[in-house]
Amino acid sequence: MFVIDASIAAKWFLADEASSASDAVLERIENGETAVAPDVFRLEIQNVLLSAERNSRIPSDEVGKALDELRNLPIHLRPAGNRFIPGIELGLARAYGLTPYDAAYLACADDLNAELVTADAPLERAARSFGIATVFVP
Image (cartoon, one colour):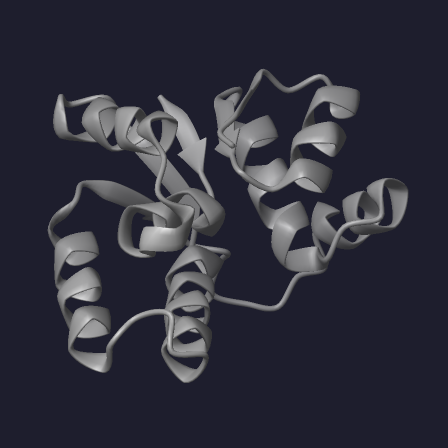
């Protein structure tokens, strides 16, 4: 099992970010390894794709195709809960200079005792500092 963040998924759909290392992560998922992400993943990847579309990095029809492909991947979204309860994210964000969104990936990996797979260098440094097994995908 591993936790994946939006920076990895973006590499699968944005030609200027594609890499063989990110393709290998996709293969892990397609081969049945369990991939998990906090619920914020679905909003973050949509934001990444919309921003890329607005900056002419991806055509709008490709955004829809990307979302369809993601929908069909067995990436398990972990809900934050059904009530607002301040969590560990703010503390992690403060401690490691992250956004609370990125801290959600860190908290998810910590809670599941899972490896974190990311292309986000500050998140990777924070995860290592926090003691989480991490794979950085350039």
